[in-house]
Image (cartoon, rainbow, N blue to C red; front, side):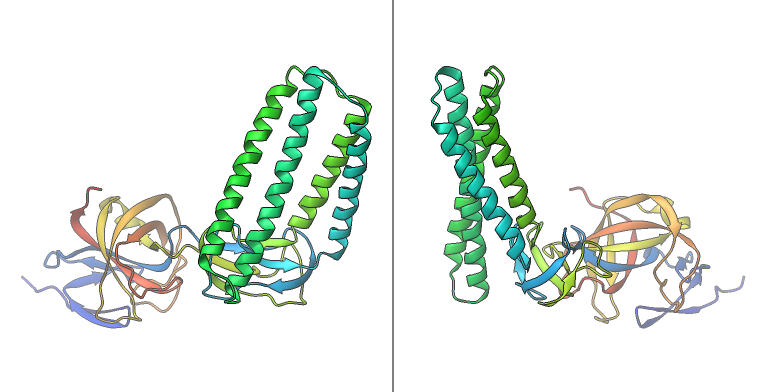
Length: 340
């Protein structure tokens, strides 16, 4: 009986001599003598939360870029600010109209449920103004902290105040909804004030769109814009990219012929060419219910192939120095399932 042929397979920059056969994709298929790995798949490291690409909601000229690559940001923090001269003027005009309409309305007194509704609407308007004012304070304190002229405790206090203001606004809005169910129709002056407040809200929303804010707590990965540039909602590349790097994953492309042997919660070993001789541990977190053409280079190959694959997400248990976007090879172990 002849002995199995020895094949040299290059994986992540290493050459491994084993009693294996290569598949059409260059991925090792374990020979009977090699029971350590069930399958091997190429992959890339990424944030488990996904990578977020940001653009502006409107066209405008960049006034300030408030962050740089590798900065840690919090949800709601301003990242880019566009020039707002025209929009600020519109907001000021709308605010003046609200003040005039409110003065005219207050000259006519009302009683009963109509008076209760009037007070509830005023309370909502005041709560909205409070949210705007406190958010401006949070933005200012965050900018000062980035310039190293502020303190962490000042930002913490400002964010807590914003949370309280938003909770108060929600409470006032619920109270108003309850009152409006049984209240009489508004008077002409009340209707005019409501229209003025709606126009103010539109102007405020337009102004707010000139500030690009962080949608999550995370780290800025890339900044592709500078002050003075004209930007639009559909740029050729995102203005910023950010991600939550507190948890890293590997998105692996597993040959469809190996999918039946891989299970969720199965343990794996991850190796990267950047760290020869280092093993990183992980667990299969999900298996996509879709077979598609592969995009990554398979281990031991320099060219992309048209072999169909299934995307498998690997949650790293100890990412160490691995970086998002880094290529890695995932080794699936036989029968290693964790219960968690």
